[in-house]
Length: 358
Image (cartoon, rainbow, N blue to C red; front, side, top):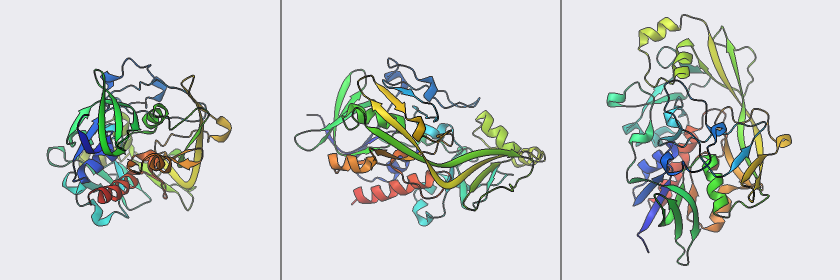
């Protein structure tokens, strides 16, 4: 049998990065390389619309999705969504928990003249790089240790109660670990669970997001906001920067000049949660949305979370299979407050790393 790792982390997005920084024990990180799965069918409809300057990628996978009301995304790229997103984090409940991350990340309070964004929530900060990457939106891809490229097909439990991973490289290779930490996106998790016989034919799968809408205005404030709304707004400088996918902020003078034009784009998150529901057709390799029970426009925020299988949390189902299988990415998060969920991912990784570092 091959080497047995104490911990294997699957994925290399933001949640995997945080855990990789906090875990002090022996570990290996396995992440997908697009070249390993180019023989799989291409799924352009699961590829998030890219900005002009963003790094390009495509979704490949064996299962086809039939979507009507919802939008799903499969960011198969080292560094995950940190290659694209604005990196906004709510630090209100994190306090001293950010100590280790602050060695690498500069948490910059958002402001229309320095980041091009502002909010009704005073605890929102943009995550930026440090050193030569100062004023650049943080990308986690450069900060992984013990990383190899491979595509996780499935996993099972062997007779010694070890977790066996079938990983696609040039050929299928087996990896063994005592603790498996899944840090993959929703689409990748679904495929892994189907291949591992955890998601079965006719099973129903649900995910949540906070009710989300967008609006443009010629004033920085909105008159129709609700009490529970969290509004993340962009001035003209922020709109241009995000439309281009520009990762480095404009200097302060350019920000101030562009912001003289009174035009604003608002992302409005509400405390109310909405749902998307899907049915698994394993034999035909299809995941089909159930439109009558799926909110129209679901997924536009890209901040969906809380995956359930037949109304049971996926983390609970995995723990029943083996108590040493954990999840730290967005499908395993239960968000209590509307808005970006980076803080939830950080809290999830802190809790689990504290447990496994003992």
